Length: 420
Image (cartoon, rainbow, N blue to C red; front, side):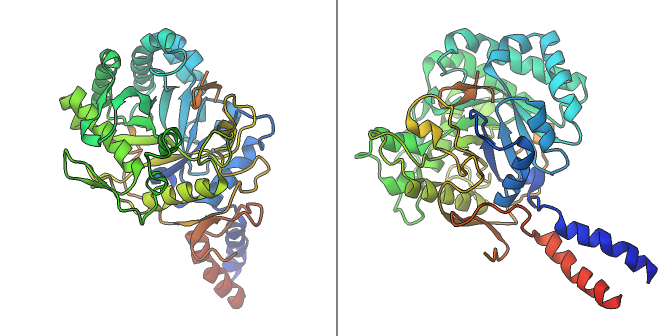
């Protein structure tokens, strides 16, 4: 009986610990955590907010050590950004080795780091003319630096592209990359094929709708499940939402540019979101539309299905973004993509509830990976939960909701208490 007395405090402590997402390293859904704001919560409080969403992956836009340490021992898998301003430095073997040694090695293994994103939207950004030549050398040197440190099977290297790398995206089967970018994109695709790292794209149906609201149906852009959809005349495939069409457009463009690399291509959505506010000319930027879009993204990802072109490859997405960021330049919409306000309260009511079992059994290591500094374009570079996570605008997020392991322990505590 004395043994039970010693065990009970540990079990009670387990119940009181903040919940962490069941998904851990194999979550299908992630969220982007940007920090371009002067009123954001301390990094140490962010993992609990992430846990309340039930997502298992977080994308960072730089390698801030405090932020990375905040996710240590949480089970959350990080994407760590190499800011645009670092590209020239890490494009040399010495610079890359130094960057890995200073920013990545100290965080492991306590913090799970799945891969590095080298720059963000480099090929189409405002500094593309000066930075593009460093992109592939930086990716190669960072990969080699990780290999020399024995980390290449744990941390993969990639970069995130704007959908603007496509010359055309509709219909998906007609998509191809801009010809002026092919000399850079083709060897990048070869790199991905050899390293086994995913091709990342920032995909925003919102931009397509806002640019041409009379030509794009709102329900199609919002990923509404009841939309009739659009057929691709080139393949006969049926698209019920624009995000899937955008992803498949990238697959088709990869195949057109590099058929050998296309066989191993893994397209992931590194950013997608919808603003909850905007300027007068930013059509559709409302809390209602943001709630519908982000809720539908959660629903799609939770289904574990692929796109019409790649139905066996579950859609993997990083929602943009965790917080509204008040110091981002540009139109009002840029400061209103967050699911949360800086004080931790939801920016709007998000009615869809993400199942706790938002998981797969795939590995996150190196070649089998299945899954901020300054501003650069849109992104960065320079109640009873019933077994579900949800966001409610009615109350501030309360970290520590029970997850299934905690629920399973509860009866044990009850039995032990009765025995004592």
